[in-house]
Image 1: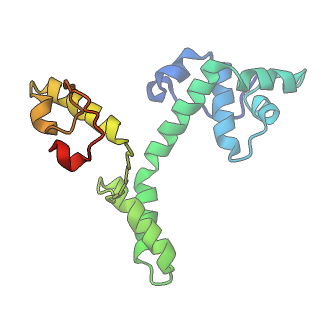
Image 2: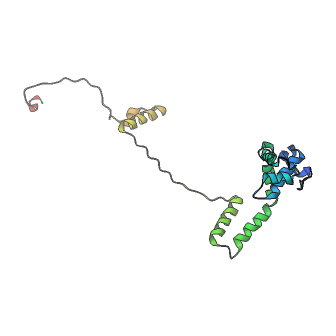
Image 3: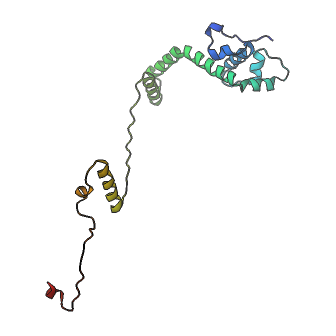
Length: 178
């Protein structure tokens, strides 16, 4: 089994890649080299795997958790080395006279965000609580108790009070009773 892809030396590999055997490392690197539309079977062949049942082997490899972790790790490693180039491209787009205003705006916002200057987003949220008079009184009483206040002082005398009364019946008109 001879790999047709270059695998970086162990000193440049992260822990996830180091955990893999050399054949699996070659598979991960082959996937990276094949670009945006990888074919798992083709990557396995480039990595040096035998043609026998290569599709099922490749599918198993691609879905292995350790290989997926190594793919993610290798992707981050490779992107990291190209960040200066990506930044230069963004700056070129921002300063080029032929760049349209919409793209310049997007690039400027992205550069600001990458530089730690994020736009301030303001939202206004209105919440409306509708309470009945009885619910309001109960809430005031509850808060008054929590604050060690007398609810009667806060509410005044709006409550119905128990009192004794005598019912007066008379055949006379009301003006005669008074």
